Length: 309
Length: 274
Image 1 (cartoon, rainbow over the protein chains, first blue to last red):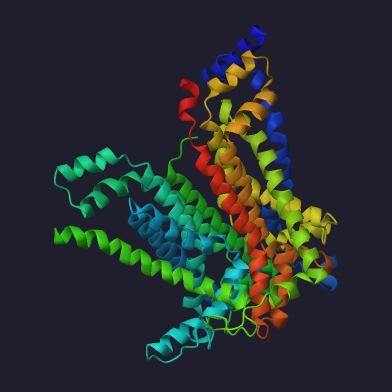
Image 2 (spheres, rainbow over the protein chains, first blue to last red):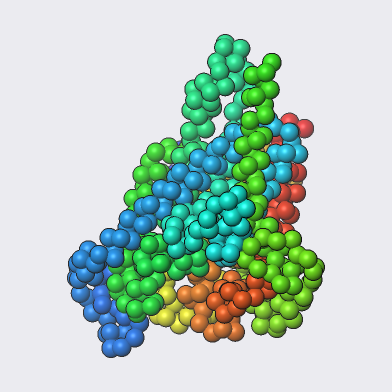
């Protein structure tokens, strides 16, 4: 028994130093990683590779093209870049990303986390629960809440009327702002929790030392807290940006991409081409653009993260 | 002294304003669900009723969609945790040459938007003859949740001191038993976080089943609620609100449940010293 433990212990030790030639942990690692790799290969990496392949075909949902997939080279991409709606969709996606992910969720989440620090615990809990409620609520219910809230006869207009302002047809006049606000409402809690956790890790003594040395609250925030939570800001950025890039349900339910093309982000555009116009090849070409933006963003962020693995 | 008071009050004021802004849209759903004649605007119901809830719950199709939703989400969460913990073990405990690239690709996959691959996934499901299959959908959801699951579980496992496991080995436990009996129980907060996150993602996921499932009888709750909105959404506000609340409830309950676990959890520090 002792010897067993010794070998198991040695395995950890030896694998750490890497001196042993035949590593008994190797096959065990393979075995342990096998189920996850199989699933990822078939249902994750497979579709990614298919995206690259299908983008160069004339794949369609119905008609003769559904049977005979033909390689059409860059035709999908040529028609995509000639398509003015595609350019609009790219712009809409950038606006949606910037307003709802970077400005909205990140900054509001950080503001909430820093303001809630060392406040009355009951108050802190109360605000926390309210904000997190928006996050726990499924995306589709978030859409209902906001469709009702922003409706012509909805709560927001009721409040505006009560203080003597005119009603606004939010979803028609400001569709992009509307979906952004709904997305911020849904997503901020995540950033808030990430920042709360990392702010809790900042040792109090450092802050106290700085305060004793005469630093103002603002200086403590900029010079001490921000650099110390930089890592989690970047990590959070990666997750939030990429989550927002893939937002479909919220926009689909609230505006359906409209009115016109005013909230038609890339996922909505992709859906319309693939499943409404039945052009799967073209739809996949749009997914590829989405995927490549995602890949570039991921690589960029992983690099800047400098995670220890 | 005055300035000191200012500095203390302002955050409370700002937080309260933000809190109210976050609360208002939610209040509508709560009030409307109990209101016999619910409208779009937030009003305190003058006639309190449970009819909206009983109407929704007396519909067998709705109940079925809830069961299907639970099947998909629980199945996915369970699979992600099991497969994830198994995968996290060698990644956390051993040093292998491929570990770095593996972890980087996992991290990379965590962040890729699933939305982007849905069109080829649809085609893949037709090739594999999995379209309209709930198990197929669950497996796809599992794969999409795995990168996050593995990444989180690996980090949570790193926090469990190897010494604890080693003492289990001294007592004659195998590696597998050590994982199940020592490492996994100590990771309960982490496992719960991952399971609940995965469940909520899947429970709230409308796009994936909407694309992959075609038969209305197999729709999970997320798709039936969308259909309900499309058909009655602009008329039956009370029922829509009640449906939304019932649909949101599992996610809320699990979240609260995980909070209880989490608060008990993060106290591993003493385990090795004691």
